[in-house]
Length: 233
Image (cartoon, rainbow, N blue to C red; front, side, top):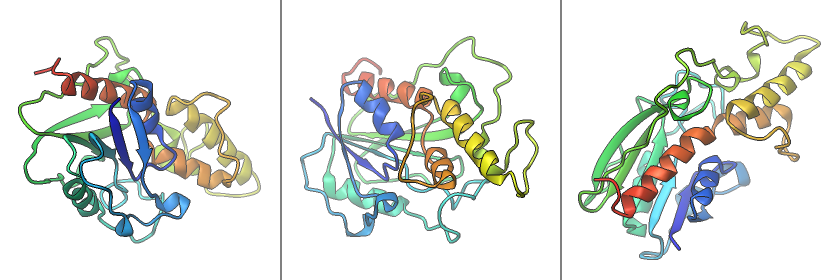
């Protein structure tokens, strides 16, 4: 069994995709659950791979999630790679984020859109795959995907109305944020029954918005599985 350490896991959407492919995922600390990545030191040589997406607010065009003072935590991701010494790693972020450069790894960059991977939205993400040696990383795309993917409500937070216009608050604000969460779940590929009971509705919207769409995560997890098994060169 391939043991994987997940950094900045949030609610674990990328983790879900890797678990579906048979990876055993161990979740590291996350601010969402009171964790502190700066104090985390993993054991060396225990994990086959490391996955994760450092907070993207410093580079995202939409900065309505998380801290009002975004911090670049990519160096923390790199530090943990160096301490952990895995055979491979995968980092996810928005276009424009800095490339992670742990020494000793061949790094491949792939930019994906949710609809290319079987999803329905135009969410765009970049994945960096680092490996030791000439290992290929080739997510497979859906050849006949929709030419007109829909915008995702979570990209605009809870301010997006059903007609796509911006909602500025008022007496129906609670209903609007509830709708944003329900629509956002479907945009991310989650089942209708999915919920986060301890969270407020605004926190739920932010939590799912910070995750990787499941269709995209599945395409990436399958590509990593093929790569480490030597099936993609």
